[in-house]
Each structure stands twice: as C-alpha cells, then as structure tokens.
Image (cartoon, rainbow, N blue to C red; front, side, top):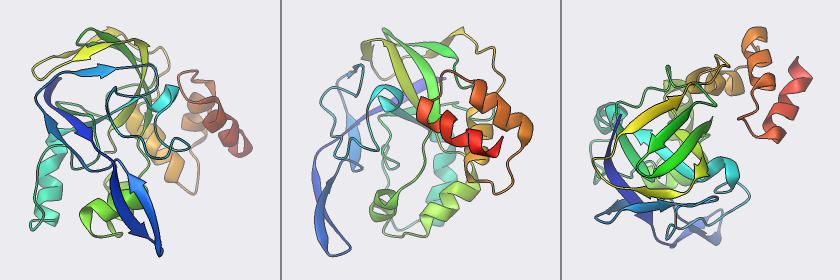
Length: 210
C-alpha cells in the first residue's frame, strides 16, 4: 500500500437545512508531509468533533483504487484526490483484507486500523447529491479511520507496512456491512463485540443484537 496523496481541508461555510455550518470535507492535495497527531491530523479542519477526529478517528484513509468507479458515476465533478474527505489517498488499500486492530508503520507513525467511515450529509454536499450516501453504503468500500499509536509524519511515496496483524478476524469491510445490515450476522457480531480496537461505544451498542 502506497501513499499517493496527502490532503488537508480548510474551514468551508455551507448551508444545510437553512442554517450555516462549517465543514472540513473539502480536502485537497498538499505538497508537505502530514503530521499524524493523537486525535487529528495537524493543520487539518475538524469542524464537528462529536463525529470526526478523536482517538478512533484521528486520520481517514481512502483507496485510490475506488476513484474510477465514482468518477464514472459523477463525471461532471472537478475531480482531485481528497474528494471523499480523506487525509491520505492510498493505492492498494483493500477493506476486504485489512483487519480492524491490525497495526501498520505509516511513514514515521505507528497506526492501528480502527473503524470504517460512515457517510454523512457533508459527503453529499461535496458531491452535490445526497443520494451518494446510500450509494456509498451499498458499494461497500468505505475507507478506514486510524488510531495513532505513535505520532509521526507521512509523505507521498511512503508505504503502509504491516507490523502486527490483528488476531481478531474482523475486516473493515465486514464491520461496515454489519453496521448497516438489518439482520446481523451472529459470527461477525461477536467478532465486533470482542474487538478491542473498535470504539467502546460502538461495541456496547452492538451488544443489543447479540
């Protein structure tokens, strides 16, 4: 897995339901390395810390491999890396193989796979179409958030090298599907509840399905 773009967002005013709010979803490539801090990417905009940033959402990765699919669906947009609000665009990122809890060396940082991205209305604003939320869920390739175990810098060309694979078999994609499925697979459910790399609140909410 190789970093092909480092992306930063600046505060952008938007109107939603008649009210003005701020978003950091408009991220664009930058030339300098990114510093992965414990709760966010240094210099990036995290507008709503109730749902973005923090220990389990410190940095967001999205695969460049999925860009052609979305470019075909939205050919009239002004495409660039960072379109999905990702801090790091990664070549070869495969959510069906990456396990939640696995630890990687990323530049000089040490990171852990924490959880997939769940789309919100701000992705719809960036794409000019709220229907993308359902399409993004149905497509099933959400990218992943990271916990930062050791802070450090990441630059274009750095590789994401596996240090320790999670002993829990749950992949990012499996957990994403579990979150949005009406009928919860009992095996996946137990894997999620037992996976200590997931946010405690998410694991606790899943217990009602067990």
